[in-house]
Image: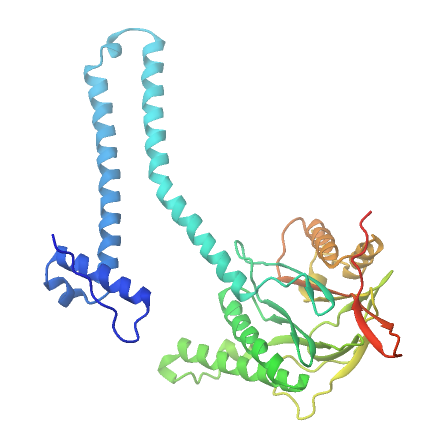
Length: 396
């Protein structure tokens, strides 16, 4: 038998060529009219439908056979005429075993599909809110998030740390609400930050890029929800959407510049936990436009060995069964008192303390980002300063 194989067309990728070859094989088996009727994507759809139909037919056949065996057993089995409990017990156990095997066989396929869907969702969430590196430009990093949405690893909180020519830039934000709409806003803001952090020389330019990205996202979402009005809906809930954002820039000498739009100020950890006094923040992004003059503040200087903890308001708004708020300052102080105070240890201890306080359930997304300054300046023979990294503290 001669096997025909199409040649790659100009500009085609190998994946597209393989897809076309698979389609030609299915089209030859189904007849020439299949291509004209169903188009290029018929091959994969036809195969999936055939597999699903065959699986359903097999399960229906097994169920019918099992019912037939039950009826024939009751009508013609010699043990059914014998008196006593043992024959009836053996009969019941046999039927239960057959039914259990059939039910397990029926559930294997859906469970496998559910496991595969969870793996795809986990991979997509890690691409959106990717894990931070352990070290970045002389800083030790760790981050953690607790989502209020069941089964989700990503919520309405966002964070990212990037090394740029302007210094290490950090963003932490909190989108109003949680769920899929909040995740879409997180994707828009993170995508904008990852570009603007490298392009904009000032933090004010980065914040304005985030504001424009949020505005585009809300307009597109409004057009999708109100196509009949062209997205113009003054009474829409999108008018009340907002995002709190904290931008930081950590310079070579440990000086931290900050631009805050409605977000909680971070904590600095030494032997104790003290909140950074950065002044009154600007309003959150969304309801009001940014002012012409954006006040970038020099809020703190992070010395070697000190830690900076950024968080969202879900950490301080968490309550227990009696309505008492979670004390984030005390939890951070307890984590800093246990040496060595590594960023990952701080994140782990604070999350455990918060879950104990709330009984294992959170009703708002909680994000923590911890940075430790591992930079150290020592004088060289020429009298200049050279930057080195502090050695990892001993765990003995």
